[in-house]
Amino acid sequence: MSDASHQAAAASARTHWNEVYAHKPLGPHPVDHPVLVAALEHFGDVRGLRVCDLGSGTGEYALAFLRAGAKVTAIDYSQEATARLRAHALQAGLEDLTVICGDALRLAEFGPFDCVFGAMILHHLEPFEQAVVALQQALTPDGRAFFHENNAGVGRFALAFRRYLTGRLWFPKYGDDQEFPLTSDEVAKLSGAFHVRVVYPELALFRLVSHYVFRERFAPGLFAWLDRTLYRWPAWRRFSYLQYLYLLPARRA
Image (cartoon, rainbow, N blue to C red; front, side):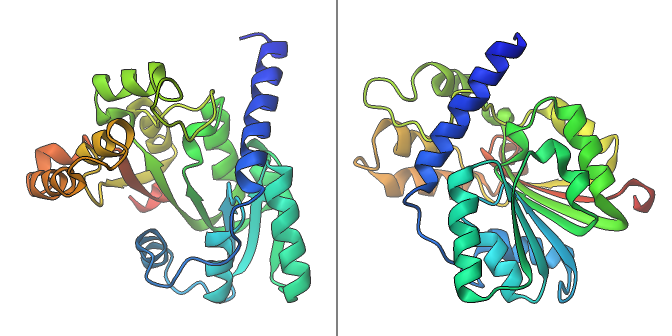
């Protein structure tokens, strides 16, 4: 892709996310939100720690980490999302929340951080090798990171459906045109810089059919039951569309 094409694609993606965040409600996730619980279990006591919410959107996680006592830096490249979150922080007097409209590849410039969190952000970042280096440089020597991501290992049929049918006919589309689920090669690149543990917290596979094909109108309970039942067999778990990535410094492996 030429520089001009890359810039045009980036501008299109930014426009998409500005529209998404224009009307999204503001407020922290509840304390029992499963992704938040998993991240805090990995980070430990975050009181007084410098926590970065990378790809923060309108701040559901950033505000939750702030509530847990962290000093939070929320970073997103959407002007709409960061402007709304910044205005909320000023109005509420949230002195320990810093909001930055910036590029994730420049993460090291905004650190250092004791913890970096991201929800559905890694698969947006290109070139990925540069993102890994930026993450390394942004973390303190004992820093750790947690990412909630999608998974390209969900299967060729699902990926083909995502590429060619979402956003067409009656199939909904939620992401921008440039993003692609996190690949095993990208996880391997992370593993070259960190000790990485991958966990599939649930099987999200047949529910994709229910959601995208049938719009939850045909037996959604059946598809959910299939996912719950097949999750009992570890061999099925790697096909889940959702995964958690737990990162520690490589020297602690």
